[in-house]
Amino acid sequence: MTTFPGSPRLTKGGLILLAPETGAMLRVIAFQYNPETMTRTLAVQGVGSESGDRVETLRLKGPPVETVKLDVDIDATDHLGQSQPDQLAVGFGILPELAALELLLYPESAKLQEDIDLARGGRLEIIPAAAPLTLLVWGRNRILPVRLTEFTVTEEMFDVALNPIRAKVSLGLRVLSVNDLPIGHRGSSLYLGYQQQKERLGARRANADLSALGIQRIS
Image (cartoon, rainbow, N blue to C red; front, top):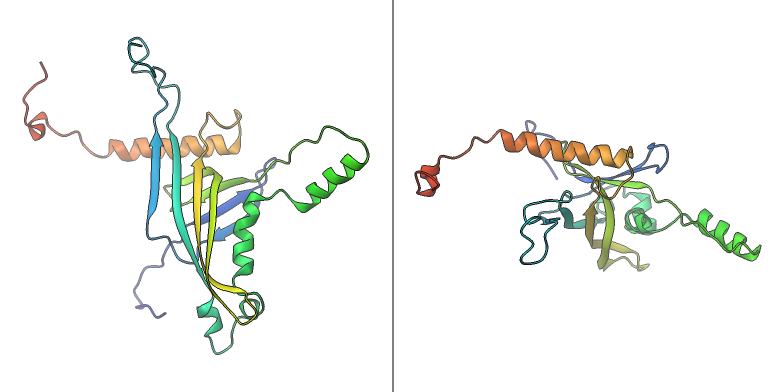
């Protein structure tokens, strides 16, 4: 694909994985193509949930529960159509790209083997593995700690060895707020930064006059 010399460099969305204990960066996954749409849903966290609860009606017990849905397209045809095809794509299609995303759902195999060995040795209590902290990065103004809740892969084309060469990955993500993370957690500070950025952006728009709503005052 050719671009004009003066075209601005496209910022890609993606995911970053941080080590759960140290916060060290483990992996950066940039989307090959930015999704055309992103659906965000915010569910209010109100205290008064029943009719007649007059005292608590306007209280909020925390930030809204925010969920994000987006579709990620992965395509190896560009790599395969070059004069010198990418050998990873030739041998595996887009399996490496799919694996990088799918592994967000898996504990490490070393941890699974450790649990198997403990079970064989009679150890009854097995502590679940701590997953890396996943960040959804959608430009510098939106860096969100998230947990993957939905993952659907639609493989659309295959090579002669039945390796997928084109697929759509549908992701469902739940934004992790300060209510979801321990005090002092790296993700908690990142969420606060995300909300503070919302507040700064919202403050940049001046309040409208009452006349814009067709009224002069509130009785």
